[in-house]
Length: 245
Image (cartoon, rainbow, N blue to C red; front, top):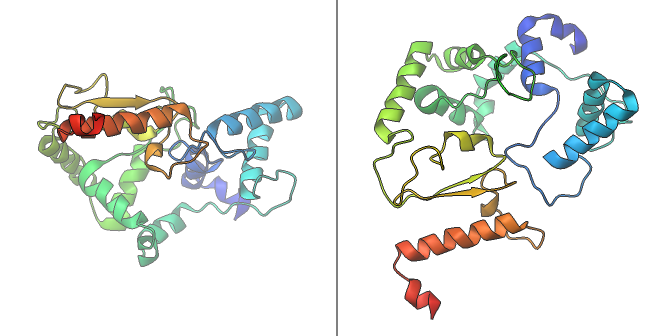
């Protein structure tokens, strides 16, 4: 366990590719106030820690420790256990069904793909070259018995069935947040937008944040997005006059 486990290449890739710190790209809440509760605060803490320690690695380590200890980077804690084989065993078990983890991964293997890699020559801000596509495909093969060529065929079939960025449909509103990692897959200003397939781009917002419970701390962009969605629904239902009056 501990640092010794990182001598195994797949453990090191799993840790450096996904496990050093948690960046809430999907769940980012601009209105939260805790020290490292959102991307803005996390980045500010990382920069401040770098100024104190003078080391990128030490600054990252301080953030990682704070996240494991409820925001306190001074409290001692135990090492993180990194074990790729143990992760595969978990994903292959009934235990992984409890929060939908296994069903979601099954869907990626048999329909959509949706793998978040970080390639060496990309603009990815994380550890480049560690989260490889081969790791996701290995999960498909070992946890579900789905071979790599089957994954590729399933993704192609899904795109052909639904249309990819060129959906043959109408009255679908695509709403995406600026910091939502899934937004790159959506119909948007550059891909497939039309009068019948309108889009709304919500600056500074994360994954469907406008669907969360209304709060007095919601930012202006979230409030405006909800209004825009409401107006579009009223228009499609033909209720403008009723609601305008």
